[in-house]
Length: 126
Image 1 (spheres, rainbow, N blue to C red):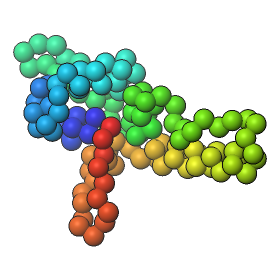
Image 2: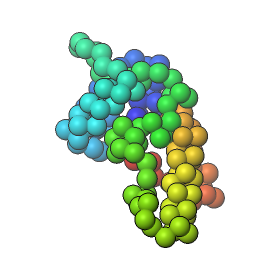
Image 3: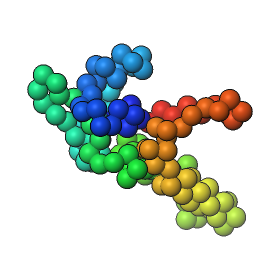
C-alpha cells in the first residue's frame, strides 16, 4: 500500500515491479491485493500498462483500515468478560490506544515518513 501511495498519480503499478523493488514475492503480493481490492482500497487496471492503484487518496486511507482488511479486528488479546476487572480495563485501554493510533495515521503519513536519523527506526510492513 505504501508503494502504491508513493507512486500515486503515476498510473497503475504492477505487482511485479513492486515485488522487484521491495524484494518481495509476487505471489505473496497477489494474496494481499485481493482482500484490499475487495475492500475497495485499491483498484485494478487491466491491459498492457495495467496494474494496481489506490482507490482513493492516501490521506483518506488509515493504517487501521488496512490492518482490519488484512488481519481482522484490532485487539491485542481477546478480552474475557469474566476477567479480573483491573486486567480487563487495562486490556481495553491498550486496545483503544492502539486503535486510536492506527485510525489517526493515514497511508499518506506512512508514505511520507522520513527517517531523520535522530529517531527510532520504524519498519512499516502493511
